[in-house]
Image (cartoon, rainbow, N blue to C red):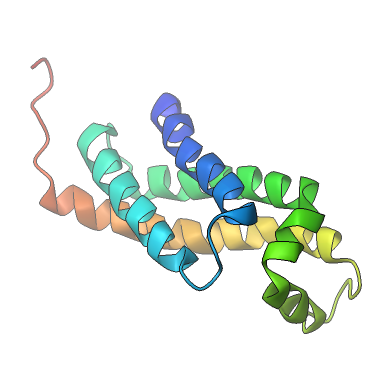
Length: 136
């Protein structure tokens, strides 16, 4: 595993964590994430030593740590800019009325779910991207 690559790609998640607090509205956030996933998948396919799926999975898990931490820490600002999240949180049966705690509990679940997606993207990209032979 290339842990340096995983950490470096997770910095896209850190940037998105802060950008989604106040700058990027929920309705267009998926488009930004799609671009991040495509770029990460291409970079994993180009630079990872193998295990492309697992590199994608781990990038998303680290992303979920960044995102959960930033959104929980800046919870008030986040929900002020994303009121629909308050409504969505009210529909979750556990920890109702405790939005920040729900975020912390659900962060790893979303990290794994999106890790499956990024892992698949990275695996598919590895089939399409030409890698340079080692030593060049």
